[in-house]
Every structure is written in C-alpha cells, then in structure tokens.
Length: 124
Image 1 (spheres, one colour):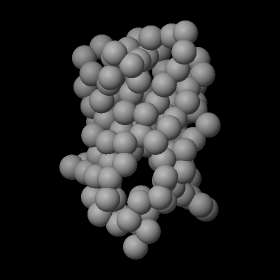
Image 2: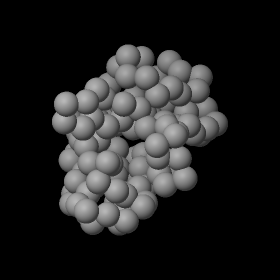
Image 3: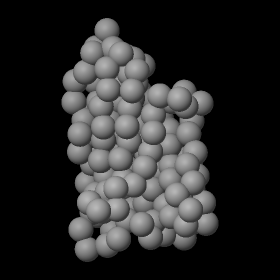
C-alpha cells in the first residue's frame, strides 16, 4: 500500500492547515490510519489515528482539542485538520496504514505502510 501525504506548508502561529493522506488502488476505509510527526532531533511520535471499523479516533494529549482526524470516503483520503498551530508543531508529518487493527494505536511499530511525509512549519 503506497500512501501520499499532501497539504503541508508554512503557516503563522495560530493558523490552520489540513493534511490529506491518499492512495490509489486500495480502499483506505479498510485500514486503520495513523498520523505521526517527527521534528529534527526527535523521535517520530503518533498524534492521531482513526480505526477502520467504527471510525473511532484517538489523539495525543499535545494535539487534543486542536487537531481532528477524519475520513473523506468520496475522495478515498484521510485528513488531519490542524488548528491553533504553534511553533512546537513544526515537523515532518506522516500518515501510516495498517489493515489488521480492530481499533488503532499511536505507536509506530504496528503500521506496515508509510507515506513519504510532508513538512509543516509554524512560524512565531
């Protein structure tokens, strides 16, 4: 499964961005999708995920209330709506997919398929 992220860019503190994760040839509704980010010198961390079965969502405390993960089934994409961005959110953002989950997790290791990442930079 090949994933492609889009929607990254440069935004001022307090601003918003919407990232998308897409693929071709497969139905993303069949996969749990996780969103991760990696800042320079830091480990990759899971920030949000959505399950395949009931579209249940989980969030890291650092983004809870600011970020929203959801599915756009018509476009076969999963989005990450990011609001109230601040410089600490600056990172490369990745989406990942796993077809064997009942729910979803914010850990890196269970996900088998990854996108190439998209840069998000938040200026102060």
